Image (cartoon, rainbow, N blue to C red):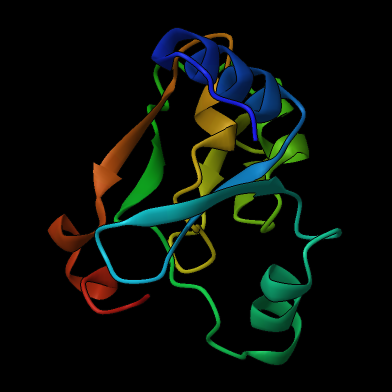
Length: 133
């Protein structure tokens, strides 16, 4: 077992963000965390089961990505990093946008955006998503 300081853990998570890894927290009896996993949809059996077969093994995050169109320069870095295909590019606007129903709220796109055009918003503030987990 390896113990990390909070600073070391934050540094590792940022590194994993830029590698496109999704972070999941596993509990036995909530709120006690027994495991934090960092992987991609392609590598994770549990995420694959949810995405490909609809088996509700994991739940979406409490937040979802929102792109500020005034700040987005259309570079598509966020789109390339999204494990869930939730970011689309508009040729007419030359900007990216989030498909809210596909977004898992992992924040990988926000971590990758060099222009700070992406924020995370509470899923419950969007009526169509309030009960989509």
